[in-house]
Every structure is written in structure tokens, then in C-alpha cells.
Image (cartoon, rainbow, N blue to C red; front, top):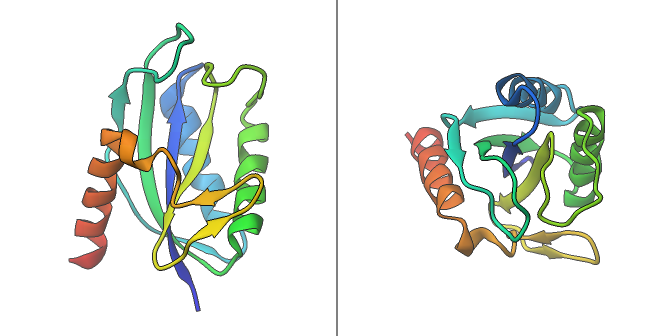
Length: 138
């Protein structure tokens, strides 16, 4: 049985539109994952102490047969392929992919917590979740 997973996409370096488009394509190429819906693109200010450019954000919902850990590993591979470098916490990045929520699932280990602990603090994530649930439930 597939889980419905909500994945946040963000970029504030390079050709943000192209990077997010490639990330969406790459997500659909993960074995055991099927795209259900995607939100409109939204520009947001960066969060955290590091001075940087605005982010282009989007959220997708997918049906996934993968465990949360296996999905995270696949998403981190997509980030790496897009040139993601993890050197500064809250710093600029070519691509950020976060598992925000998995319907009916709670998960916590040393590197992944679902629902994402920052969900209540990110209004744009809450808006995007509402948008996807309206599309998916319609």
C-alpha cells in the first residue's frame, strides 16, 4: 500500500525554475514513487541568520511505496545531483528537498523526523499543504 507523501522543494541559487523542474522530473523517476499533484511556485524570503537571496518554493504530493528512510536517501541523491553542498546550516542552496508530511505516519530517527519539525513555523508550507489536499481530495 502506498503512502501519500508531501515533499517541499526549494532553491535560491542558479536557475531556480530549471532546478525545480529537474527535481520534479527526478522525483517521478524514483522507483516506487508516483506524482499525484504539485502546487504553484512561490517566492519566499530565506529563514535563518545567513544573508542570501529569496527562495523559489513548491510542494508536491506523491504516492510512495518506499520507507521514509529510503525516500529520504533518494531525495538526497537528487539534491546532490543538482549541486547541493551541505556546508552552512540555513545557508543558500541549489536544491532543498524536505519530506514535510506522510499521511498517517510518524517517523523519528537520528536524521529524519516526520512530520517535519519546522512545519508549524513555515506559513508557505501550510498554504501549500492546503493547496495539495484541495487538489488531491477534490
